Length: 166
Ligand SMILES: CC(C)(COP(=O)(O)OP(=O)(O)OC[C@H]1O[C@@H](n2cnc3c(N)ncnc32)[C@H](O)[C@@H]1OP(=O)(O)O)[C@@H](O)C(=O)NCCC(=O)NCCS
Image (cartoon, rainbow, N blue to C red; front, side):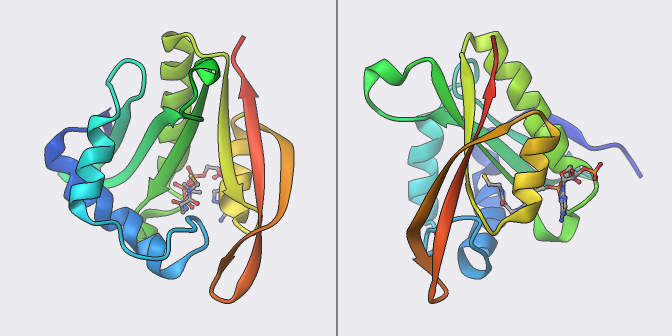
């Protein structure tokens, strides 16, 4: 088997990125989005990103995109410029092969290189794999927001995990 290859995403990857994500929209509290993301919205999202400052990355395995990650603005207001928010989604059929770690470790390198001061992950508190992944890469829990979402008829808490970069 060829090793996984990490690279910057291109517009051709957006359908795969969306398929990976929309699985979690339908079946998981990983995202509180309730309706599938349409491709045109994903395309608009992609164009808000930038290879140097707000990158979107993918991992390819045997010619197929099986995971993606991104650095996005933490908040729109200008004063938040030192802070970036990370996202990592691995195709549900490819968990526990080190791909999430590969994506997030690379995003940390890119965030540091871009001059950000910290990275924040906003994670549903019931998402043990995601909390564990962020903790494994040095993020610390800095906030717990109680009952801020509802999905599948359940109240959901959000944990913010933060990694200081300098
Ligand atoms: C969270 C997620 C990205 C992890 O990806 P993954 O490729 O399965 O994780 P990895 O194999 O790289 O695991 C890296 C580390 O994360 C932790 N981890 C990952 N899955 C875990 C699980 N099910 N239980 C406990 N720890 C877990 C472990 O510390 C692991 O290190 P180890 O394998 O040496 O024990 C993946 O489960 C996923 O896509 N979940 C849905 C989307 C999501 O929640 N994204 C995060 C919010 S933005």
